[in-house]
Length: 381
Image 1: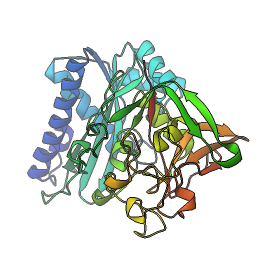
Image 2: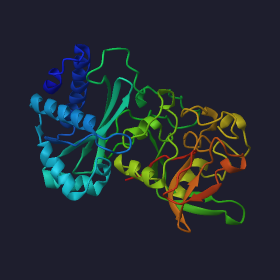
Image 3: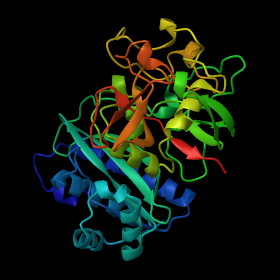
């Protein structure tokens, strides 16, 4: 590996070793997931920058990873020239590969069971590489792995630490009378896994308020305990954020991008009524914790000057143990009205009235707001 770079007399030996170790780490992660999910054929796509553009470094990282996987001899690596030709013929880019139709199309055309795509982000002398593994049969993201390494051609030095994995987030203990709260998964799993979610049982609840209040019956469904974080979202869609904000909810995300994320991890956005039931329970409460506004239970009214890491307000959880159903960031739902998508919950910048469980707003699906994020839901069998 790195034979082409070894000819460069200006290349620092330490950077070669560092880069090779990063590729080795990525290779080990890909092989482990391939074995776990019984995938024998792998295709490696070009890696993109945050804007979705393929550059020389992204191509180089992809080539090195493909070569390393082939040398390991544990999987069949489909020729990259064939992959690139098929992608060009069908107009598919690295960002499009997470679309289920595109993933299946690539899998069928190239005979690939596992697609590896991802991003490279340059920061000074370092490169942060995120590899995303997509099972083409289910068109689902099954894992994401990261490595930070020196760029080839630079001297070794202290590298910035990558964002802490989801498994290392601060976890709040369950409240008395509330269900136990499993931690969000550090690796995105394939279909059938409800880790980091709670089951909201079937039944009726009070929806709306005043003249619009009515009883609504819903089937059972799963919903995330926490809002999707920057660290979660970056596993699917490339964004830039500081390590300090890894566990903050992702925001400034369009409805379409939120939907793509949920679908990529085998979930969906909750409907407006599912969101409301998860937030208020069955007793018609005005706030997730009760009927009276409690400033200490919510990040609102711009008291903190922005979002906070998930799981901070233990006394503000909903009857089902969900965090930040009021405040922090507003949340997209799957529901539509008058050609716009409904979002709920209020944000860190909202008033007490705007964080009520019945408050609602609308926005066109292509628009974004600096304090609007989301969480995912899933049908219950």
